[in-house]
Length: 247
Image 1 (cartoon, rainbow, N blue to C red):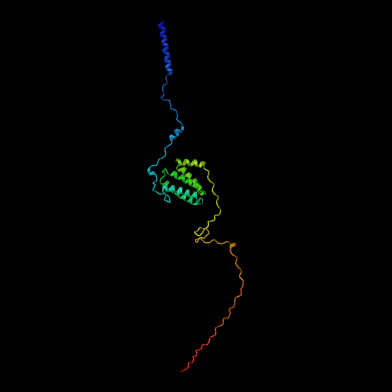
Image 2 (cartoon, rainbow, N blue to C red):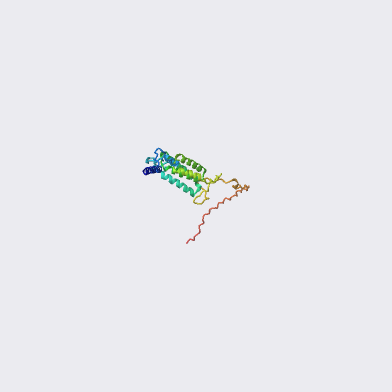
């Protein structure tokens, strides 16, 4: 009888241990379960196509010249920098600065026409737009807006285009000076002084109120010619010989 109770007790203990082992064992891995979704931002970044890296043939050589001024890549960058420095020193040459910037723009467009995938083009367009914005001249401001659109359309994925959008969003442009109705040319400056007139220009006519009034002429008596006496002829006398005593 004791053996029967011991056997029943042993079977009960074994069943309880098996249940505990089943509850404590980890669930089998389900291979068909979907993996957790990744953040949308990382997926979007990976789906973007890589930027085009230009080959050696697509880069403009340093010894090739563009535009009517025949500027190289280094010459274009140096010209833009020099125009800006000269304008910083003297704001009166705004027209000359604008004309020089337009000629440089023609060189950059010629560069883009021949090498459209050159990775140095966005930087050149960006600094050109900054130069147009600096010059306090209405046509230059218009060209600055057109140059920004040029950068967005042709090089919209470049770092310079992203920087341009941030700059335009936060930039406060300086007001343009009022346009003078009449401009008086400065006096001719020569080595003899500022007021010395130029020999190549006709003198300006004097106003009517500055002209001297004519002096009225008075009738003066005309002097009558006085008779000049004619010289009287003098008689010619021969010399009288003196008498010498005879010896």
